[in-house]
Image (cartoon, rainbow, N blue to C red; front, side, top):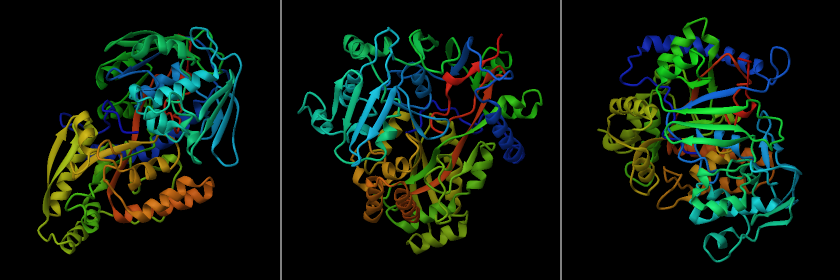
Length: 555
């Protein structure tokens, strides 16, 4: 998942002077004390309160910096909207407190021995917020809606492996042959080829039940008349002001503790932190000044929770554009970057990235080639590549995301030290996304990736398999295409054996990092402030925030 332009920065902005000494002190302190506090918070914030029982009732008050593009599950897909979509809609599968798949609206499910046919039986009595029972045909309709080019769903690519999807997308068939509902409670999905990760796709917020009759009635205006089968229903959406949700009276699941969820739109870190301290907000993403303020105040320290994310921010080098078509140049760039300094400048809200797949995905790879900070080695590699005096290039980044602004400025200085004159080229989210994903446009840039599902293929295969390179809208922004890596990735994605898949993905990551199309930078750690009245705030490894499981002390 590409990062959303509205993601809050955890890096000091140019207008905020945070001395390196303070940042270093803060990072050093947090490395020990805050990591311990996070584990304590995660343990304490279980489903039981001080009296051993969670409580129902109250309104959970949230805030988002900008309004949501959409809350239609076929459209909404960024780090802010996904947790809200989960309040309104539910699907066949979900995750437990870890990364194990469990049935949600499915009473049971099975995969055929050849890995190509998925069969689900729905739980009886599951209803949409208007009272109508969820039927298997609603799932058939929802999946076809995602595949329909008219919908323009960013999730379309996850479902193209279904038998008959290509013909449907091309307009050669009215329905997807691999989707069927033999009765109201049975859903059958047939794939063209075995696909180990399809089980994870079915837990994504794209793969939820949408009411066919309501969507067909409202068409593209469905986003203003959302009717889902989650624990809450949309009661008000004043664009740019607030979103309000109340309990779905027909929901029978175990979650959904608060009576209502109120999301304020807009504001700044400082104002929001003060509102939380006054009890007007229950959860806030902190900026560096607020994080330091709360961490240093013994009364407020427990409010601050550092949340690791399954993301990697990286510097990409376009392997189809000179001089980054030379592996020695790409390795030189890796050695030129002082990642430790980048980490300190984040105030400690990050961890160093030495590879592609984030450790928060429960992934370790001891075989990765080391790229320690070594300017002398970088200069030697540039001389060996035929650039004794360095070279000039352009360096693109997304100006909407302050963390990328600061990373770009610092990396530019590192590159200058080894003779690479990188001229900064800022662009807004839309322009940067378009250019970086188009062939022969951006030689060097900063980008990031958040997991779609907890499997290494979501980083390695999606972002590096040369078979997926397209002229535009390409996730492989380095346009990296190594036949040996492609073979490893193809073998791993085709395998249904978890141990074999892991072995192949480890080999692929080693090879890719040796070719160095990326310089991995950091894995973000988000500083979150929670009101002490909120319980069960432990972050989830996939969803991060599960508002539906949070509960409140009585007012």
